[in-house]
Length: 101
Image (tube, rainbow, N blue to C red):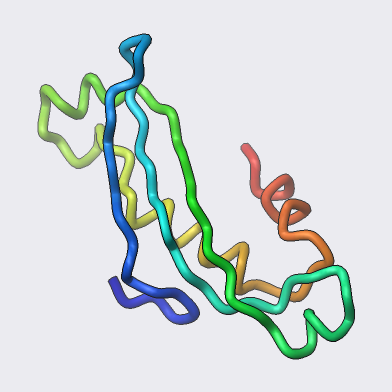
C-alpha cells in the first residue's frame, strides 16, 4: 500500500476472539510525524510505529462476500496515517478523540 507518510510494511490479522467476536489487527504500521510534547519533537519529527486492534462483527461480511459489509483495513490504515502525519500536536491521542464518532 502506498500512502504518503506511511510504510506499506505491516501485517493484517483477523483472529477470532474467545467470545465469538472478530478482530482486525494492523501491526507495525510505520509513519513519520511531527507529534510530541517537546517543541524539538514537533519541529524535527520522528518515526511512529503503530499497532491497531479493532473489534467488529464480521459475521455478515464472511457470509455475503459483499464489499458493502466489510471493514476495509485500507481505510483503517489511512485514518491512522492521517492522525499521525497530520498537524503537529503534543499528544496524538487528542486527534484520535476528535475523530471518534
